[in-house]
Image (cartoon, rainbow over all chains, first blue to last red; front, side, top):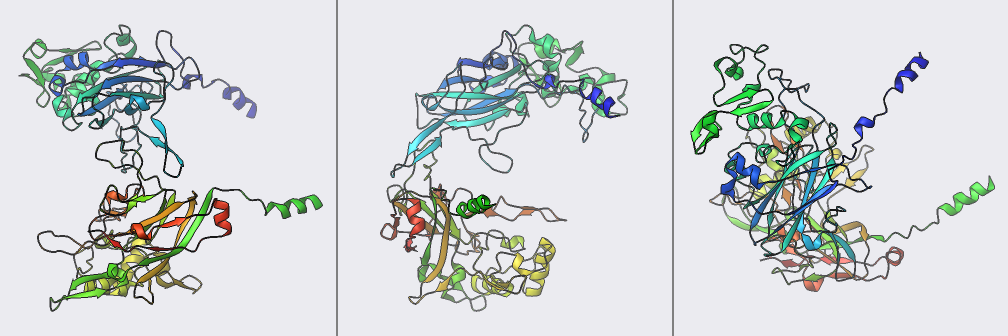
Length: 319
Length: 305
């Protein structure tokens, strides 16, 4: 019996749980200087795709912590810095507590990654952009000569129990307000430290937005009700041609979720409309959206200039 | 065997050279800080009452220096200001308190019951019902007048079987019948109030200054201000949650950054260590201090206007 167990015990190495470095991608990336996005420019999906900075990280080739940095120059106002690592959107929840089988796309539990956000004056950043990630810790000497390590990270993330220094979990957006009143005209560094890489492809794509003003009202400005939807399609940077094949229908599912038309992914055979009101488009036809293969197609009216998808009514409305 | 015995005997003489020291001493609160104007609940007449139960939690710390540069009262020096509207961190070497917030069984008493102030149930009920004039209410909005009922609620809530298990009860015996005198303050010959204090394992720096303040309770005002008897240093939104049956409240908890950012919590009516009363700890090293602890008396005698 023991002999049998020992044979089966050796049939896996666990290597699939260890991320690897992928050629063509960087482990420590530099996004360069990003321009703050005006709130009025957040309203349209395509505009956000154009203005938000996207990138993809892999495991650093050397034994270093991975991540990405970007900078912005402050004008003395307040900025909302938001980073959204892939992916979190799924269609068929398979968790034990709230299983949902009405949709056709199963959750890929291995496509989520995690980035931890910190922001501070570039003068205080200890890392070397593009080579080594750092932090914002500086030495301070009090009047008696005692040395204290001061963390000058200004990105205050508060946990669910009110504690500072928290970070969001896997694939969840992180955001914070940066008040630059004390340092107008100075350069700030945004450091996004890789906490975990998706195990399905060892590539962590993400989107970064620096938005003018406070974080209050950003979702309204982007006409969404979930922070996940402010940065659209973070799994596939616009300039990554291979990404759609790699990530499957993530972008379409996210689009459907964010526009409240997730019902286009209904499994109609399993859930006919009379039994499941949320699936009513299965029989009545989608209103402004249709699923063709893995692609979510927006109706010509919704896609045309001057119209947007009405997020509440699932209808095309005049912009 | 002999060598083992030798090792054991010398093992106890090893000095770890820790750079910390326990700072102990006596804290003095002036009589005026324990005196308040209260209204007689029956006649409505105002009178001055001196009562050690008016002494709020006292926070003490060791700091590199004390100044009056940034506030209208003496306060510790601060490190660099990193974010707008947030003062610099004081980076204390250590600290402690005389009294801390404890939950005295009723939501009505959350953030209003420091340890070391009340002897027992009757003492607390008498204070709030008769002295402060803000009677204790139970979960049904009824005034609590019975110590027996108070005790029954506490035992049921905490699932305990003895009074000594609650820190806010000071005049009590332990499980062996040994008297526990946990009241902090006693009146001295000058009419002021004294209490011992301990600041455990302070990172020692020669020349460090001891400073602190007493969080005075807010004045009761059932009028427009609708202000109850409470303390600025207690976080009413946090602490242990109680969701048993219809309950939905938190016990409150002491704020976590009192010594690092005292300016956030000190307001008019509080009492601080004034510049003239700041005590300097002057032994050259922590080891020297541990060998010859200084006799320390800290006076919190400067009222913040």
